[in-house]
Image 1 (tube, chains in turn red, brown):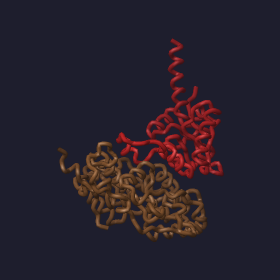
Image 2 (cartoon, chains in turn cyan, brown; image 1 turned 180 degrees about the horizontal axis):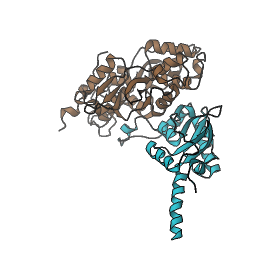
Image 3 (tube, chains in turn cyan, purple; image 1 turned 45 degrees about the horizontal axis):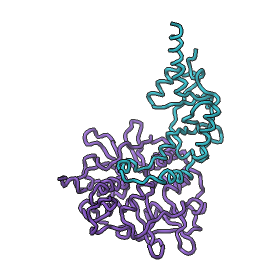
Image 4 (cartoon, helix red, strand yellow; image 1 turned 180 degrees about the vertical axis):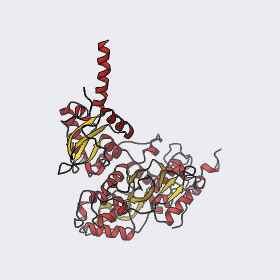
Length: 161
Length: 294
């Protein structure tokens, strides 16, 4: 039975570098999703030494793409939206992963119990947690894997009845 | 009939224009993490808190540009470079009083405490005030952009009326440290980069500078490698509302102003100027403008 982080974590993870331009990061997201056979919404960012320096999620990218004053013009009905996305993409050209990644990251050890992981994810609104031991990255636990781990137990019980 | 309160800025309180949800970081967070927050949320500053979550300082783009100039390592804690203590106003303060406070202290952003709980609930910055006024004007029946605009003979404000005529520039062969020196000396947010013939070829803003800092760009790098090009501009004869609209929609803080005939850059117009001087498209309701003697 899967009990701790080590049992649930994904060890075939992909990573990003802080120097990677955002446009390239989006491609890496797509490619990694294909290779891992799951939709990835966030990745770990490692520096040249292989140390974890941040996490980049799609949310970070979307925050950057969100027009600053959208709360004002979102209420107007006479707006020509042509070109707004192009202008946003143009601005993103000079932005790298290290410029918008989240640097305040929470990590867990390989022996963290899955319900403690669940508790951290819920309290801190995190969907993925890097698993670190002695400064080395062992893997990453996704909320979806935690979900299916628990859900599978439900279905097992159903089958037994 | 609409009450006079809805016509004039004088009836507005800070809560009407402030941005709710503020970004904060702990005093031991790194300089680099502050840059990420400012870039991602497109804001000019963030609040720094101590271990009890109490606000102890502010880190603005200006602080970060100074840190870049001093070659402060990117993993330094924010407490090394923050401005302390932060300045506050209250959510039910009249907007005009908060603006006077900002002007007096030469700051572009003031944090807002709830009048009852004393908790920090928002931040007030010039672009947000322009946004509020723009929204107000766009609903006005006299708005030039409305198909059913009721009046043609109102004097419409143009960029030429409100722009700053004193533009600062650096030569295209300048190095980054010279750019930072010029920006700091003149207390401006961006500077024009000009070629030998004086033609504007690009712009370097504080945002470009903090990105350069985060990318590890040395201070002896030529300005042309960092500048944004082409120069975003508008015409001196453009209506005020058009330029504000352009800035609000494309997340640009300033436009350089060209003479319509010669095409030469003759001024600059920013959202800060718009907030400090006037807003809106016409002079039909001058009372609604923010009146601050410069």
